[in-house]
Image 1: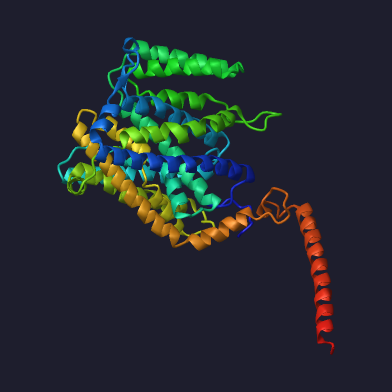
Image 2 (image 1 turned 180 degrees about the vertical axis):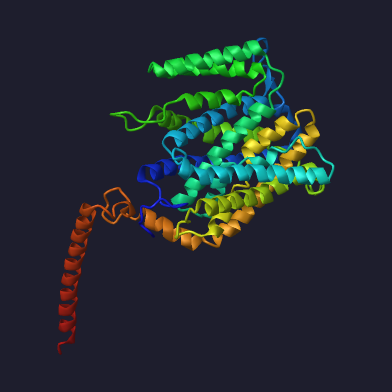
Length: 462
């Protein structure tokens, strides 16, 4: 593998960035597997014991006096996903101040790729529904990428991507989440309750001031966060926006004496809750739709659902790949020589898995039509499945190349805890390796002598 330190598109990451991404994606991969299991459980439950599934999903609980008498499904979508978006807010803040997005030149390619990867699916959906006389209300459904689901697919097929491709996928997802948040805030805000909105803003100001004053203790922030969330929900703005806002307020840069920033520390604590509980429970109570031969046929014959499927499968792959190629061409960015454009296309196809946020936007877009909402959910499931299968085939074609690159990235022959590829300019590393090879050479010379003596003894006549 090339060891040049020149910044190239999909070039080698810095060691701290590589370690951060590896830790983050490790949790997301476990969460993604749980997400897959939850989605399968929801489908089995809804298609075998549909009555009990609907009863549990639609059961209401919560204080009505506070405007929070919600169904279990709404608690999952509006409450638990606020945790997911809180983590997304921290990820975005960290990427902006310490990650791949802090350098405008380096950020240009993934940002353009993500924007094109959202615009193209929306255009595909709009084209299908304009030609088919369908509803344009669902244009935003196929614009999202679910990184946990994508990583679960990689885990299932046994493919480990090189760190540069994993970072590209994560950056795409972070930018994708940002614009999904903006879409939800702008296009799916109901009639505003300005008193509640003012209270939520005041709560966020208090949250920010406490952070700046260095106040610590979960017993301070968790109750305040719950109040902010409740006020945001009652304001008419989607309550997940509260989670994003609080995540963006956390400091994600380290100060003298700190190994990790407060944002990274809190993300490390909350990410397992998000990936391992919040998102799988949302999937359990949102992915339970009736799947039959007739329902699948309708998905591919109705313009709304066909637009969602084609948006995820065709729009995402063409949008991300096309945006990346054009941006690289016009910025004259050189592709990492260890990788090729088919690798970018495979990752772009993998980004067509739009499970979690697509389901959420589908519920918001067609909230007044339960039957159409279920059909759109089925389309999201089918589109994500098709994208996963296609990406699996494309990635498997290159799996030996990826295995070799990952092996190079992880090799640590001097066993100092730092991959060798990051120490090529360190004289001490080469001295350590020289000592190791000298010890091995001495050992083999000794073995050669022993083997020679043994052979001479065997050749002597009795």
